[in-house]
Amino acid sequence: MRGTGLIQEALFTTETIMAIWYTLIIIMLVLSLFAAVATRRAQSTRPMFVWGFNTMAPVTLAYCYWGSGDWAHKSLLLIFVGVYLLRMNIVLTAWYQNTAASKLNAVIPAKQKPLLAVIMVNTFGWLYCLPFYWAADLRGPFGVVQWAAIVLYVLGTIYHFGSDYQKRRFKQNSDNKGKLLESGFWGTCRHPNYFGDFLIFVSFGLLVNHWIGLVAPLTNIGQYFGDAIPKNEKMSEERYGKKWQAYKQRVKCFIPFVF
Image (cartoon, rainbow, N blue to C red; front, side, top):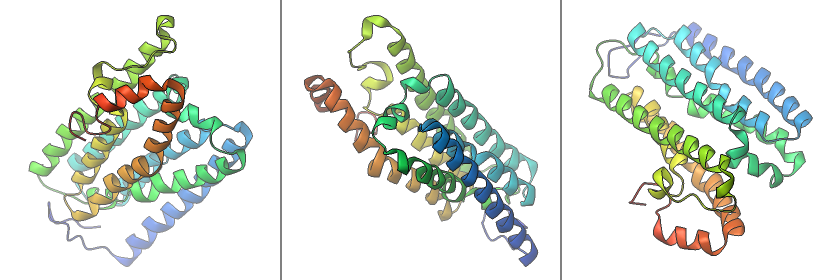
């Protein structure tokens, strides 16, 4: 791959293109198999989320290996993905019982879980990481777009990790059993962890400085509003009843204080 600075007009040789996509196909097939088997054996939603998120690691490394961008851009990409996955692995292991993902275990039929594991691996590998194909080809000094990506990434990380940490601390306090968390991050919107995650994927998209970067945040927000948020809201209303209805009337859904 050859980059041309911040304008995405990279020239790809046929050999490089084929090498990249063959590598990714092998990664997806292997990880899909392992994810499906692990999920089927565990009969839990945890393996499918763990395998799905961590697919980003080998895919990002593959793009950085084949990309001809400079090490400044590649390093920023690797740091973004590395910090994100470190945090997500903490949430999906040590903090798993306090997540909405754990509650889905009783909602999703057992037969569907292995298939969903395969879908997650391919969604993260192909769609969420697609902008990295071009981002790993950039050269030159960071522009306004790259610095905006850094700002959004930091803000998203604070919201994403901070809200999950606050929820874990709240759940660990036995005095809060049966209570609804309505303060701090959770007083700004009903799904602050999702909002933070969305900002992170917007930052991933900005790294490429091209319209193709929209693929990552659009996939992310589509998954949230098409699946995660409706399920989460339904489970919360069933559990908290009038408390949730009052909270819903007072606090916005996704964008803090706005939407």
